[in-house]
Length: 289
Ligand SMILES: [Zn+2]
Ligand SMILES: [Zn+2]
Image 1 (cartoon, rainbow, N blue to C red):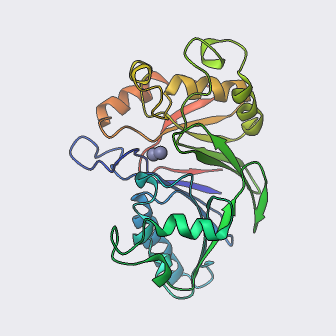
Image 2 (image 1 turned 30 degrees about the horizontal axis):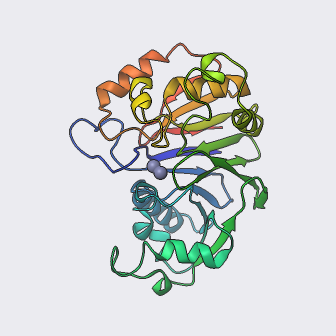
Image 3 (image 1 turned 90 degrees about the vertical axis):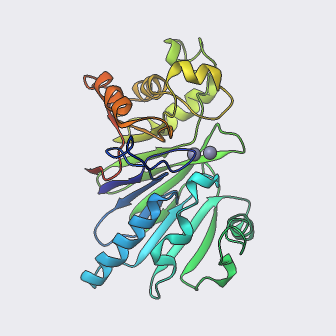
């Protein structure tokens, strides 16, 4: 199983001289396994390079499945901007199954269609090819796609967000963004206290996972001034994953202003962490499980 980060930013793509090493594309991560559908988490601007790569790979090797399962956490712009530029949705012979939290398939199309409506993008969703299909994600109801077992996990974010846990043949991984802490400052796991009931539910959902990708957009001080913005900070993700016995944590959904130097300093701060091990996600990072 191969986990690849194509975009690691939150809120808005942020290219420029201070984001060269960690990348400026917004949220998109893929999980692949030979012969299996590629699981894609979110369609931020990182999805453009992923789509190009998938199509090139399939052209080079005819045995590659032309099959993608694209799971949206929610439809804030930083998570959907790359979708209309994701090559497999335009190339005949591909199947792209799009899932997002909704009551039913019609609502999925209606919500995604508000973004591809002929105004924000020249195409309308209905004009796209028949390689696209849609399904509604019901949090906490697991389902299977090929060799993958998938489950949506409800997170705490303005307007709602649903993360995903994916169990594959050799590892289990969760992609959890966007989410604010599930306890106020001074309470819960980050304060060294008993988890709140919401924290306990999340800890139970991610217990023992091989890897968790978590929203750590802010440093703690900044979080204190933006507590209702729907994002967390590294020490929160660390405490949560430690309580759940997670092996590897990826700090993710970096703020647009988080420079390469600031993210290097963050990586150095957690270099010695062992349970979980902690890495700062960067564009192009590939991990094998
Ligand atoms: Zn976001
Ligand atoms: Zn969001």
